[in-house]
Image 1: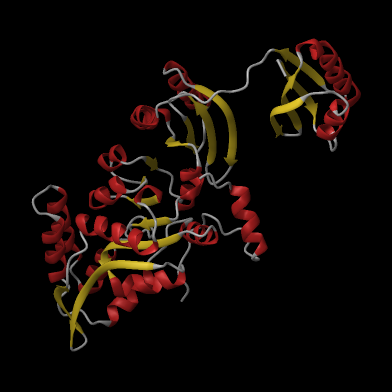
Image 2 (image 1 turned 135 degrees about the vertical axis):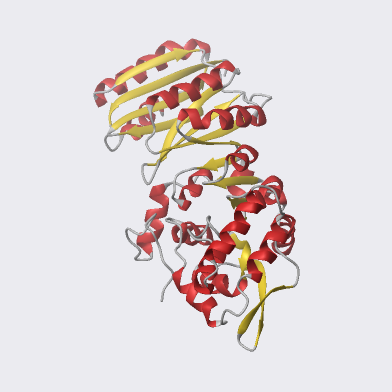
Length: 406
């Protein structure tokens, strides 16, 4: 074969279009080099790159146009179209989440890609709710450069953007490690306990001091736990019943487990409160702090090592080693400065409704209040989630405010 022909058919979708075109080509000495079909709102676009002898180009063009005419479709044929060559800078997936997604954001994103010599090869929507999620598949783009640029511009564009290298690694990530307070759940467990202890104002003042940088996490946690001294152990069970899952949390965990992922929780909160939630969500491992209890009451002290910023990173590393997952194939999700170290070492660090400094440090940021939107960053479509749910008799639960049973 010393020639090529790009044939594009477009028109109303119906059964048998692909079969009719290739049946028409069956008798001729051509090879199929590339093939892509897209259907949008009942309109079909079918593109075929054919390898053929140069002297047969005219005949094959006539065959394509004749087949299209019989189907009531339009045809375009381009002789000599080259087969796509992989760029040395690689292929990328740019996932955009908008609620809503505005034309200006799409224009700005496409401009940024074009200005850096990149090409958009394919665009496809993977979700229409609770956010609109669109994947731009491109080539000739430096992943780190594009991630840095789009992360900086995402807020003004009014979208969340994730830039990832295409390939098996993106689909092969098999460990997700999540923060709990203000990520998996909507609450801060220490605040709920402080309410029961009548120490809400005291704990809030300590938290504010820590946020001003006047004390580190470990010091502030010890001070806040000290305010819980004398609280009956039963309060831990009461708080466990009060915590509220973040909308989409149950859907995220259920879908990840179906996909074969290991799901682990790391928290600066407290093991007795989180363990029941972890069982309900079928979470594999939990790493959190332990409160000392004597004679049925909290002593105001923590037992063992504190799970702080470094502790969360260590937990991710240990979970990855236990499950035999390379760090490059892990995902970390969190919202605060305490999560920065694990976001940094994970293959994909996702800031969820996070502080600006955390958003700037993460690989991707999600600012909509639906935790299952993280699935779209992994290339999982809303349709795939709903099909799997329907097979299990689960209908209409995605992204609702979800509470643990009881």
